[in-house]
Amino acid sequence: MLLRMSTLFVRTLREDPADAEVASHRLLVRAGYIRRAAPGIYTWLPLGLRVLAKVEQVVREEMASIGAQEVHFPALLPKEPYEATGRWTEYGPNIFRLKDRKDGDYLLAPTHEEMFTLLVKDLYSSYKDLPLALFQIQTKYRDEARPRAGLIRGREFVMKDAYSFDVDDEGLAASYEAQRGAYQRIFDRLGLEYVIVAATSGAMGGSRSEEFLTPTPIGEDTFVRSAGGYAANVEAVTTLPPEPLDWADAPAAHVEDTPGTPTIETLVAHANAHVPRPDRSWTAADTLKNVVLALVHPTGERELVVVGLPGDREVDLKRLEAGVAPAEVEPAGDADFAAHPELVRGYIGPGVLGPNAPVGDDGERTSVRYLLDPRVVPGTRWITGANEPGRHVFDLVAGRDFTADGTVEAAEVRAGDPAPDGSGPLELARGIEIGHIFQLGRKYAQALGLTVLDQNGKSVVVTMGSYGIGVTRVLAALAEANHDERGLAWPAHVAPAHVHVVATGKDAAVFEAAEALATTLAARGVEVLYDDRPKVSPGVKFADAELLGVPLVVVVGRGLADGVVEVRPRAGGAAEQVAVETAADHVAELVDGLLAG
Image (cartoon, rainbow, N blue to C red):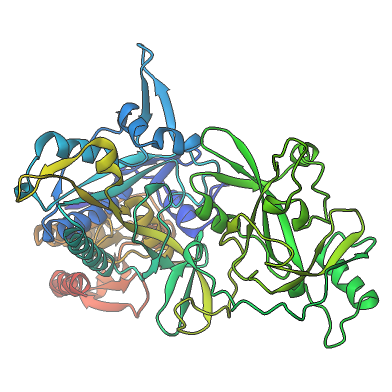
């Protein structure tokens, strides 16, 4: 393959795009790999498509290695299958919905569980047909409220989604492990650092779920890991609750005047000054903070919930959303408080919440749902709001003086917290999600009637797994991991070409030698990008070569008079002078080494 810069459909940019927040976005646009069409939507240009195709090829080869077969579904899908599984509603505003001219409802697919399930139902009916693994590489659509970071959070993206179909749970476990191993090989081949972390299933449903994250400071996902081997998305971290305490000797709860203390900091300062403890000072961890939030359900229904947690912790909205999915969470507003006058801002306590709320004249208890952090165990003593302005309750004992509707994992996870498996303190890091695998179980098969006859002729519901890789996100992650201040620096196996031949100067002999070298390399199977532009300065050509990021740059220029060309690795390393007669052999050997590495 030989690409010529003189005819290649590309324009490099010297300035960063105004909306670029991260390096991959900035450099992919500047180097002419993608162009913005709309927020979160990009046009792929020839060089970008070449890289994308190479990533897809690695995925295809590893899917084939475990016996998965490729299919291809439309992106425009009817409403009915998604209505049958409840996801037409559950996805809420996150999917693109549209109507045809006959007023039929359709969506642009965010994922294809339903369609895979119906396809297998249509064609297979016996246990002898299983196990089965199918996959596709397809464009997906999600109506992201805040598309950002170029390809990392887009509204249109390419994803590989695979699905396994088994008769029983044992078969599902084997299929899951096969897919998991294929993912490891894919990311190893692509040269991406990754961490496998426990995850929540969210709207996908199912039991076991793991994410593949590539660590990077610009990642949107926070994950934790311990020295002992525990790793999880922060949303999936569970709290180790303390043992319940004996409250037999606990003093009775008492209300104290605490004027001007609407925050934890002011409350702790007042408590130490006016209601001191005999044994130690009060701290934020002694206070019970009650945070009012609104759950917005897919139906549009708005429900208030109060989360009680130690005052030295903040609510992590993403962790809370994982616990109340498919609802979305947002802070309560003025209208919410106006509708619930019992909630006194800054002084909210358990007495008016959940099962603690007083019973009305009609014998009914109407109150806001109350959920507690797992650390609030029976016997723990708290300072918390008395539901009156300027007043707090001291020595309020959980289990004795108040209860809740349940517990929820909503508190922030902090570095140093104990790992749930006892493997040591947690450290926090950030990463980009590049893959996610699920043991779906029978949720979709049950909803859509996917059954087969087993060995005894009995009808059984098929059990499924779902396995996704964000292909365009993987490309962005590769760009994030392989660049410097001058531009991209692709690994050889995904680069748009292996060698960038640059002819510099105006001498016809230089262009003749560069042409001969580029042609010879291409004939030997080396992918070559040849900068043959006759009236472009060497400085511009060198800047473009650095920006485009082809692994090897060969400069044919002034050294030609001495019978040599310069070979320089884009990702770093010393340049070398190579004799013109041996340049093709030498460069081809370097390419072979890069591809084998």
